[in-house]
Length: 114
Figure (cartoon, rainbow, N blue to C red):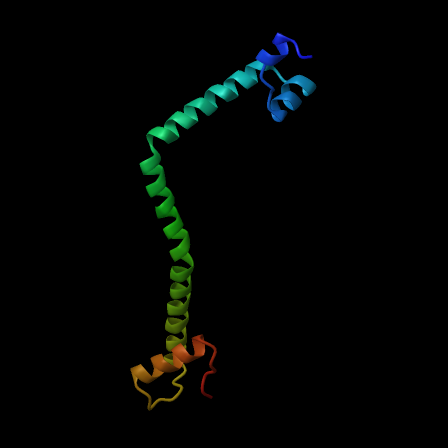
């Protein structure tokens, strides 16, 4: 039969038992950790709205970044290829629009005319 002393004591979490009872870390670290945890939870409760908006903004940036990077890379490839076609006078009879079309085709997997 359990005594009244055992009934009144709460069971420690496993990590507290392991770190502070078995390994013997200083008790002051546990009190500092619990204080910081309480302060953090209070901060989160007071600023839920701003934290949610910040997370949505960050998720949007992570979602859009690959699209922006691909577009930038593609535009750079098209510019360089157009300059190459102009400098080597490939297809002299073609207009600026035709050269741009050839550059777009090359940058998206095509080949340059010879």
